[in-house]
Image (cartoon, rainbow, N blue to C red; front, side, top):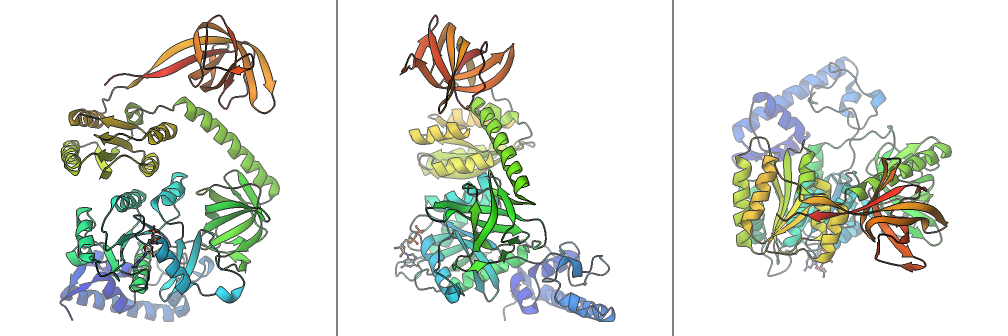
Length: 602
Ligand code: GDP
């Protein structure tokens, strides 16, 4: 035996939860970094003694009170059967982390660079581990599946990739507990590997690295581990706490160990949920089946979903008509961490929508109606503040952390910028600077997704954002700026840090129109028959509506017409038809102010 023992190994040997070992270490004042840190043999011995002592006390105490059963099955009993006060709780369960709820399976997402083997890994696990294939149907992809392992069940979301992961998160739901980052051993860390790591870090989920394709002769797992060090993911064997497992998704080697590591992390993180609580879940995917209607896969997170229950998610509601699992088997109910396909939705819910329960159809419908109204309201507001600037971002002045995504033309300039920015951040006590991702190349859609979810700013040096990405940034309200001179970039960040950044856009009024007649058009909404009193009106320009001096709408001009033709611009003294984006409540006598946002040169 070696002189040093890893914490999780020790826990395993003792047959206890790693958290118990950590709790003992806390009480005796031994510092550790994580469950994978090593302990000196002497310390390990102390832990062994203390835990067996505690175990003795717990068993004696429990027997004395005739509650031995409760102590042994604490993790799987229901709330009602649990001891409720601290005094009654078995001593082995550290009071700090004690939970009376049963454990649930961890939910895992697989991410990584394209072609590194994410899909192959998910398929391999599904094929080798799904137990009841014969039980009633054809295995089907429903967006998630659950497998049994010797260390407990694990749920996998099987749309791999960080885009799917962050899309769900963007809606406010966190569906994933653990991220597996797949890296091909013949290729090493690639751009999307770095992106995936950034996305997992932003979500604050533990990362396990699967070094894949180790069956190939040219596989070089050591190089992958060195690459990881540079990303501050130091593998355990180099003294860090990043779990890495060498696998082959093709022939299956290492996969069992990978699953064991997932269970280990899950045990440490101690995921629990109440199967008897209020139903809460998240939509993983949904689609419209020509014959069956809307089908949506929901991951249950709390409570137990039953056939005939009423649920609401987003603007859709359902009376659950059928529950099906990934093996095509019909279920009566689904508890925490179980993914199920649901039949019975009124319309298609979106991935990431939260699922809640409703007592009856009327309430369900009422909630969806309210949600629709709120969304329409929010959309209207959003259009009004499309051009989010660095200044806007900062004016939400409780921003204590500035999240940045850096894109540059070369590794050299990237390192230089990072170096300066990190020094700048160090010199400020009030503001933290978090560089979520720093990479060579143009910004991507996935950067925007990450940025919009984490309220980050994308700064580019020496690279241009593709037109589609620029447009998308505008639409999502993600600040994205390109620089040719490093100094300007740094200066902007300095201003952000000091909170002194000047607005970069200002309003420029183009003209005014008076609404003389409202023309009701069934499908395309109401058109304001207007007269341009001054200046001009331009299609796509921003607009606000004043009624008796009060602003009643802020948005943009969706459509502009002269007689029957669509036109781009109409000038003062003429009449035209104006259709405002998402606004149907225009009235005679309203005044439309047309304006645009003009960028001020930096
Ligand atoms: P994804 O884009 O990350 O989902 O990658 P895929 O799972 O589609 O795999 C890309 C290619 O790598 C496919 O041709 C797979 O057959 C192959 N592949 C995946 N895993 C392994 C592996 O462990 N060993 C070998 N030799 N090939 C693999």
